[in-house]
Image (cartoon, rainbow, N blue to C red; front, side, top):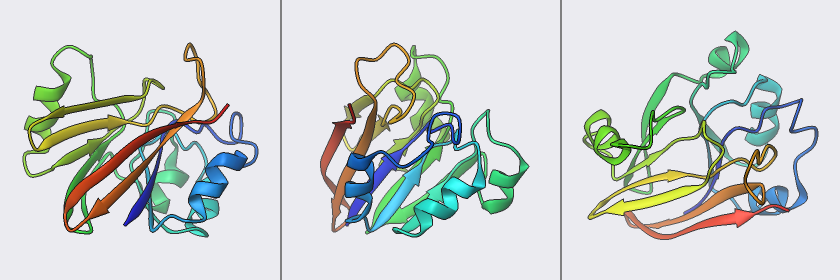
Length: 163
């Protein structure tokens, strides 16, 4: 299973149209994870044309995103892999421990908010922030993530630079 991971797209202010490299990846996606700050449900409708969308609400998301189906936190399973999602994972200090406690059954926790890509493993537990494809802030490039899952195993994790 191929999964595209997005966060902090901030449409329509930052995501006016889908960045070409993101669109190319979305065309091959089996699922899409969006870790919040979508900012408009219309973007979720756009993403849903590519694949099933799993989304959590971010601090900049309004009632339309929640009504679309974005809870504050989410637990799901993709190809047997147990995945937790939240927008804001809190301070960097203690983040891995905190996410493990918040999602005790998850093998992977996806989050956003900082716009800084992060991939940290500890045994069979992993936390992943794809960064933002459209609002890089102090990062050198916009980024998003691509995961490959096979038989409940995360076999490949990539952060892709957009620009």
